[in-house]
Length: 341
Image (tube, rainbow, N blue to C red; front, side, top):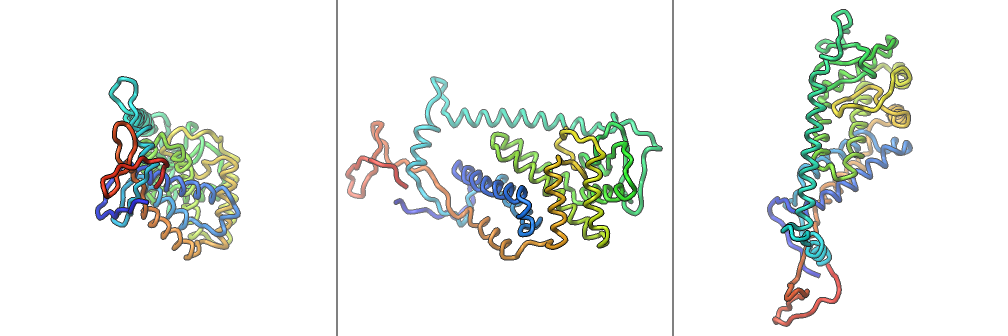
């Protein structure tokens, strides 16, 4: 066993990136487990879920070793790094890890181009909506600074990009449904949720090769919706609480559901039936419990901070003439027989 080292400065390394990916994976899987089991909704609320999201985003944006991180040298990791990641690729002069880095960079560039094209299409969406002035409407006091646009080109109520504009399909919503739609969408705009969504979109561009990033983005969008549901519920009267849930279901039945085309959209009923069921269940459970237990929140924070306490670094020993040896204090050479940490 090799004594661990203590880091006094923040730094980023291959090991810190792998450690962050591992920790983020645990949090994402935990988040997925919470949001896909309705029985969990009475224990974990949006405050708890928000902390998980913040921890994942922080770990992916800043895959660093903290000042309190203990570095644990690992011989298996060293062997993996030496014999696999540093293995030459034919006669190209490149190593396996160099090829992986190149693939990641090229993939990110492709994802960035695709993302930029989506923004371009969204930016000029008004050009294709073709809405007359008569079809624009403002509803006070809900929409003091917001414009509502109705068009046959819109399939579902939503907000797009950063414009203070709400898009509605040409569907006959009831007065009550329209009220809840507008309350919901304006709250997205006031929260700057579209900006938050873009942060996760950028992470998806960088970590496109990380399968769980797509799970995280889907769950993050779900979180934005249930958070807005909670905010709207606080300004509703008691007798309107169930009406809002019924409106979610009613609107979903009226609109033409389709796969989301852009990654800059947030909508009142922008979910498949199974996801809508989870969202309604989470909302209704909020009438009984709106906050997570403080003990669970404290445990989550402790685990989140403690996840950076240890990190593995590759340990190579001494390699002489292509063989692995570990030097002892009296200068004898001892052949390494087994992997060890």
